[in-house]
Each structure stands twice: as C-alpha cells, then as structure tokens.
Length: 156
Image 1 (cartoon, rainbow, N blue to C red):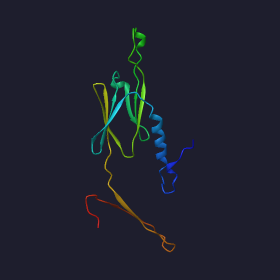
Image 2: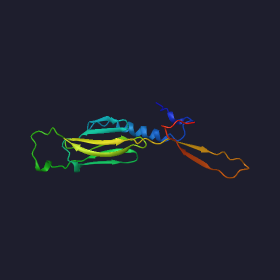
Image 3: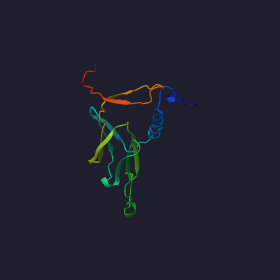
Image 4: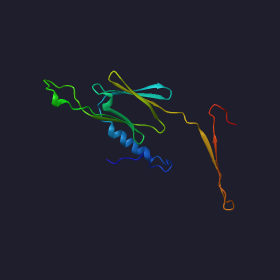
C-alpha cells in the first residue's frame, strides 16, 4: 500500500518536519505502560499524570529531547535477595514519550501517592507583522521592519 504524503503540496513550505513528528507519534502509540492521563488545567496549561506505583523518585527521570518529553523509569532489581511465592507486580523499566508542540515548556514535575505529575505551559506569543521591502534593479538597499502587534489594541 502506498503512503500518501499530505505535506507534498508546494503551498506548504517548511512543514516537512511535521511528517517526522507524526511518524514518532505513530511509533509510540503502541506503548501501554505506565498508564497516564492528560488534563487541561488552564487556558494555556496541561498536566500529564503517570501511574508509577512502586517507583521511587530517584528511579524516574523526566527530560526533553528534540521537542519530545521523555519519562524513563528503571527500578533496582532486588529479586536476588527475595524468594517470591507469586510475583504479580512487575519490576520493569519503561520509557514513555510525548511529542510537544513548538513553544510548550515543562514547568515542573512532582510525585504524589505513586502518581508523577508533569506540568506544561504554552506561553502566548506576541503576534508581529514584518514588512519586506521590494527592491528593484536600480535600488540596492533592502530593509526589513518588524512591528510588534498588541492583540488588545485595534489596528487601523
């Protein structure tokens, strides 16, 4: 089956990285452990909560790598010191990743009652308009002027 590239239109310039992001998301979609929630905690804020019961804080790492939030957990293997009659709680490592949109910042992480909470925020960018001067063969100098636009002020 041939895959259709939606971003092959000549009108979509510079969007080829989105296809790579979608490929990363598709690869991580099959991960099922640990379970997690994503909630909106404000107009520009999100919280990811992972159920990491059995993990100590020092066994977890939270990092960002190339616009990707990566959470890793690795428990210490103490099975040599114990004799299990039944082992239903797996001591396994995991890597859970989330692709972040451009500009989203990780504000913090905390562990409460076996739940790892990671707070994210998308700062509101100030819109700006850039005027590009068109130069002709007779004029050599080219200038660009950037104007910060206040979204609350009416444009005239």
